[in-house]
Each structure stands twice: as C-alpha cells, then as structure tokens.
Amino acid sequence: MDAKGLPANPSGRQITPPFSQEHAELRDSLRRFVATELAPHADDWERDRWFPNDCFTRMGELGFFGLSMPIALGGQGGDMLHEAVLAEELAACGSAGVAAGLGAHVAIATPPVWKFGTDDQHERYVRPSIAGTKIAALGITEPHAGSDVASLRTVASKVDGGWSVTGEKCYITNGVRADFVVMAVKTSADGGHGGISFLIVDTDQPGYRTSKLEKMGWHASDTALIALDEVFVPDENLLGGVNEGFKLIMANFQWERLMMALGSVAAMQLVFDKTRLYAAERQAFGRKIGNFQAIRHKFAEMATTIEVDRALTYQALRLFYDGHDATREVTMAKLKTQRDCFEVADQCLQIHGGAGYMVEYGIERAVRDARLGPIGGGTDEVMAEILGRSMGL
Image 1 (cartoon, rainbow, N blue to C red):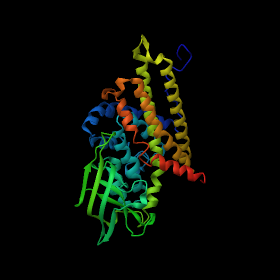
Image 2 (image 1 turned 120 degrees about the vertical axis):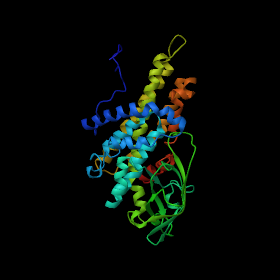
Image 3 (image 1 turned 90 degrees about the vertical axis):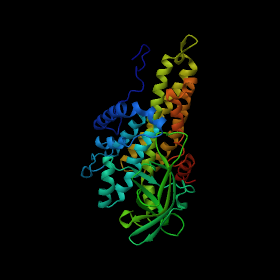
Image 4 (image 1 turned 30 degrees about the vertical axis):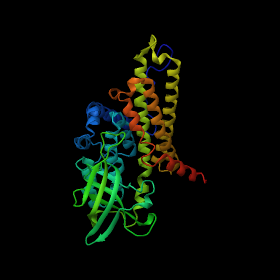
C-alpha cells in the first residue's frame, strides 16, 4: 500500500475464476517466453514488416501450440482456458502483428481441422501445426464477401480424384507464409449458405499465388491476397461434408471472437500500465503530469473501462467454458472490447503528447494495431445486429 492507502500496484492480478493454479503457472511460463524471445525483437520485426517462421517452430517446441490438443497428437491435453491464457499473454509481445500471426495459426486455422477432420487429416495437418513445422491460415474473406459469407465466389468444381479451385481470397492472416489454408469454397450452384464447403488447400500447388498487402497496422504479420487458378485439391482434403461448410464457419466464430476480446483487454492493460509509468516520470510546469487532475481523471476512466471489459469478457469465457450458449455474452465482449481498446490506446497517446506520436515509444503502434479490432472477426455493425436479433428485434 502507498502513503494514501491505495494499492502499490493497481494492475497486479490474483488468480481469477475460472482460472486455476495450473493456468497461473502456464501464465508465468508464457510471460517469460514473451518477455525474452518475442518482445525484444518486436521493433525490428515491425520495421521488417515480417517476423521469422522460427517463432512458429519455437512455440511448437515449447508446447504452446498444442495447449488444448490431445497428447496423442503432440499436444498438452489441456483445455480452452489454457488457450485463453495464451491469448492474453501474447498481447504483451509489443506487436499485434506477431500476436495475430501466431494466434491465427493456433486459434483460428487449426481448430476446424481438429474438430471436423479425419484421422489422416489430423496426422498430416494438426500434428505438424502443433509442432510449428507447418503454418496454417484460414481463408474465408474475399474481395466481394466479408461478413456476407453466402456471397463467396471462389468455386471448387469436382474433377477426377478431387476438386479444381478457382477464385480469390483477401485479407488472409499468414496467407503469404502458410503451408496450408483451410478454405471456404462454393461447391454448389445453389445460392445461400447451403452450397459452401471447406477444403484444406496445400499452398505448393500449381496455380496458387499470393501477394502481401500493406496495411495500417499489424506490420509484422503477413496479410495476403490469394489467387487460385484451377488449383487441384485431392478428395482426402475435403474437411467435413460437402456443402456443410457454413456449419464449420460458425462453429469457431465464438471462440475466435472471445480470443479477440481476451487479447484486447490484455492490450489495454499493457498500454495503460506503460502510460501510467510515463505519467509518473514526465514533468511539466514543475510537477509530474500524473498529478494534474485532468490526467488523473483520464486514468480513472480508462481503469474503469478496462475492469468492466475484463469482467464482461471473463463472464463470457466462464459461460462458454461451462458449455452454455454464450453467443450474446461473447458478442457483447467482442463488440465492447475492440472499440474500447482503440479508444484507450488513443487516450494513452494523448497523455504522451508528442512523444506518443513518435515510433520509438510504441504508443502510436498500439493505436494503429487496435483499429483493426472493430473490423476483424465480425464488424461492430455485425455484432450489433447479432445482439439486436437476439433480443427479438
């Protein structure tokens, strides 16, 4: 406690349900890894607009890619709460691009293959994904179809021994470096959601091309435009049933959005703590800027926002973990945390003043990186529509 009777470290966390001591030990291990092997290189990787594939193999070596996967496939045999800890701790690496690339591999692209794949697909794709020797991407979004997945135009036509795929995918995280893409395609001329299937597309096939897209934030990650011109995919790479792909898309959406919420709360806490230290040292008009009422009130409001968002997200996580239909709570958490993360980062930049606008402090990066949150994984508008309909409106 300090002289005023307040906690000396307001951001210090106790173990919070549903997490256990086991999860706390994992958190400590992940925190050490991120602090020693990722964070020191974040600035260089941002400048390079790329982080090395060695990060994937290293994560695999340490067992961080198979936390909730079965031991028989090289995983750790844990649960989704272990994955939740991973989402929170990766946020501290200092580059949302790195966190996004590693997170997309483990939490977005690999789970559909594990949940719906055959034993053969598990061996060919899940096992090397857990080991970090194969990098995965999820390919749904297209130039003309984002949230409206029923409008997909990438077509898979049946040929002898498999499928011929032609079309485009865009804004695909890990799309340049991926060894395989779990891809949504049209396998029926029927309109709507019924004609969508999932194929596991190996990226070394003739007719497969990628180009790296430049973007506002997430500079260290590769975001790709993928062009497919009669790319052959064998029958054994059909994931799930023909024309059952929409079910697969929806199955992982809740977890993806929950992981985004967890990561955003952790990112808010990180930039808040960094700014609080800055305000305790920076002086203006003869005193530390944190002692000015206007600045103190900004911190009070941000701390309240973070705590509310954490409580909302953890409640959604508890419900989801216990097997309840948590669609409404997950949607609320995703909607609130993404916009709040951007606004908290922007307030932190304001407190830093001119220093916050400079690259060396990392605050401007936090603002740019946070801006994707209200778009990716379902836009704010889509989240609001889901919530409105859940109320019978």
